[in-house]
Amino acid sequence: MSKLTQLPAWRTLWNHFSRARDWHMRELFAADPERAERYWLQAEGLTLDYSKNRISDQTLTLLLQLAEEAGLPEQIEAMFQGEKINVTESRAVLHVALRNRADTPILVDGEDVMPKVNSVLERMGRFSQAVRNGEWLGYTRQPITDIVNIGIGGSDLGPLMVCQALRPYAHPRMNMHFVSNVDSSQLKETLKRVHPETTLFVIESKTFTTQETLTNALTAREWFLRQARDEAAVAKHFVAVSTNKQAVAEFGIDPANMFEFWDWVGGRFSLWSAIGLPIMLYLGEESFLELLDGAHGMDQHFRNAPLEANMPVILALIGIWYINFYGGGSHVIAPYDQYLHRLPAFIQQLDMESNGKQTMRDGQPVDFETAPIIWGETGINGQHAFFQLLHQGTHTSPIDLIASLENRSSLPGHHEILLANLFAQAEAFMRGKTADEVRAELTAQGLKGEALEKLVPHKVFGGNRPTNTLLMSRLDPRHLGALIALYEHKIFVQGAIWGINSFDQWGVELGKQLAKTIHAELSGKCGPAEHDSSTAKLIAFYRQVNGAEPAPSPAPVKPSQAQPQEA
Ligand code: F6P
Image (cartoon, rainbow, N blue to C red; front, side):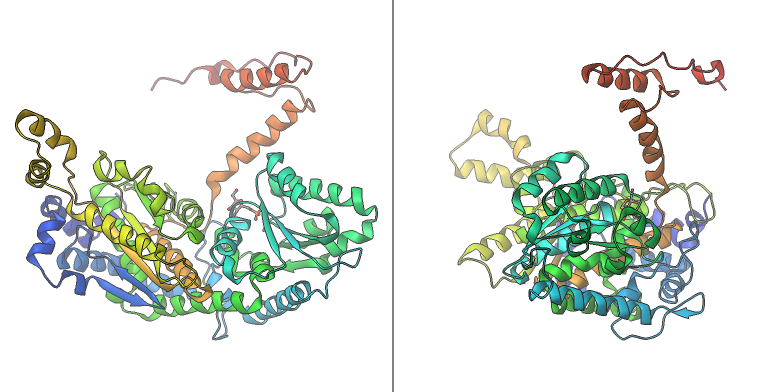
């Protein structure tokens, strides 16, 4: 048994759950007029209404006790102190240093990282200012009008999500493009919309070994050189962001055009580092610094607020209540804001790559559920697509409904409709509609007898479906920074309580290794390797369709590997 499941609070929570599982939120609200007052938190311009959850004061007390018993306060401090909490890679985890606007020293191996953080930030500022104000010119002495970011995963989703979320702050001359997919259609379509003389490519890769990114970057370089016909012109149009100086140089980008970050920044936590360069180029240094300020504010709240008034902690504990006790395997992110339409994808990587783990830090297998499946879409579009399942399906999935209160850019009348829908959905998910209410409604519509009774079960909504309503004062750089940091810390808290390492991602490696071998086979660079019969057939089929010579027969599978051994 894991340490977690032996903690006194864990056991008490199970006892508590045996009673709580039958609660209905309708009754909890009816019995307690103060409920919304109490389950309401504000921090850094964000307001969280967590009253529409299947919780009571006792649930929260026990969950908070669990956090204490699991050593959460010490683990939070260990991260902020620069301890090597990424134990499988022996690295500190210091995205908080990247936005440490107080500039207090943070030590890694005895060295304060703040001077180098500040120095890269200043370089990014100078460079982006030069590009934005037209001092940085392309090889035909024209100002840059288009930025193409080439990167994938954390080197794509963060900058992409932020640039789209804060589009009203963008430089009027600048167009922003993101290419992540090695499927050439994305790059091809992007290149159709830009011109080599006025385009700046930002090649982003923490490792600078990622096949998709390097392939896209090479193709973009070839495309550029076909027009420019001068290797020296590359320096005006290609910059790199990476931790790997050598690989950047080998690729052919002058290290003078490289913006550095460090191994203590996880890819999915890297938008605050030089990986945020496209954000700065598009939105300006001031907006980028405000984004950092907002995140820093949330960091301070997370580090200093008592656990019971700590927004990331409360969100994380409520999540644990569903994941580990109710067995809820999914969690929906539903922003009621078109500008936030990539937030679900961003949080999906953040959460699932961090906490999608089955082994604890001590190497023991978990004996409880870890990260839920994160999915979502803008709330209003979701309402007309998958919300049916969320209301009446057999799965219960907690939902975060996110919006900004103020929307200065909205056309008259739109924002009220949006917010009315959000509040209505939260209410509907909570209360549902009983058979009696359905009957009354149908009777009022003139239905009766058998026809009415036939319809009743289909129109009943069980309700009791949990939501968090999360409101930003307004969608601006500062509040977006706070919102992202909120989710980062929520995920940290869950990982800390589960005792897993939220900062590695070994699970992505096997597919990468196999893809290398199979790529060599598909392109005919090497003969068939040893595969299962399905994979071998797929490879042969692809080669046949693409007119390749039939490959020699695969090496026979050793008998010991052919059949699983019976125990
Ligand atoms: O394969 C997963 C991953 O390593 C992510 O963790 C990372 O954000 C992404 O690939 C991109 O990696 P890189 O920035 O090194 O190209």
